[in-house]
Length: 379
Image (cartoon, rainbow, N blue to C red):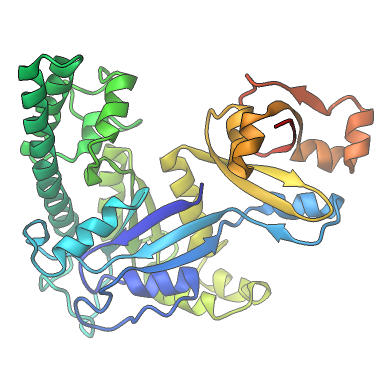
């Protein structure tokens, strides 16, 4: 279950520069709109210190981290919902992503033109949101018309579907992103009428609408080198907005991330320290994406490989097993489970078993973040 995160934003906000830094890719970072016409896709590892801790105690041939799929999508312009610029291609690429990483320009540089003539993060976010809302409204309108037809035919559950479609369409028609209809945790400005009373069934049904503004958003504030590590007034404004929406926010400098990407991991310490940073932005981005999408990792560990697997929070043991192979889920019998802390404390799986800390869990076990698991199955 790799994450698929689409980097979106207006032209010349630093999307391709950050993409190249994150993926060591070759997207053309040119100073003009639409230099990224087709999405550039990169697969990057998710930093996780627990993998190193496991390897300390279990010797293995290779270590495989979880991955994030990063998609650099062509710059959006006002009117994209009507096909302006590369609008149709832009919108189609966003629909395929699990989450949206909205790159926001929070730096001033006269040598880098701004498509709107000035730096204004709030305006830029509003432009992107409006274009996505307008495109979603068109999608919701089609869903509404279909629901109206079904309701007239007397189809089962048609009235409930119609009521939900009307509700979503009205919300989007008011210029509000669908994610505020859901009432994200910690989002006080979510729709006061709908927040909290959208049933799990309705949420699942809305998910089938294919709405872009229903996707989780991570705001990425691209600041100047002198504004690291905490950002500036522009990024502070984005933080305030993110807090109201229940969205994530990361502050970084594309130029610095590009410099870090050129260095070996062991050689990055001095540059990080010079800017007051503890780690490259990738680690922060990955954690925020996991949080927004409600994901976590568990591990398998043995002589051939130590590997991190991505699952949703709340997943039961058979579902976690199915991430490795569908046969594991179909024929699931039980799982042997212990923690990284147990391994640190006792030093080996044999010692963990001898201490009575190797647990046998069944089909109803809710997998915890950081579990080390071995599955027993029969197909």
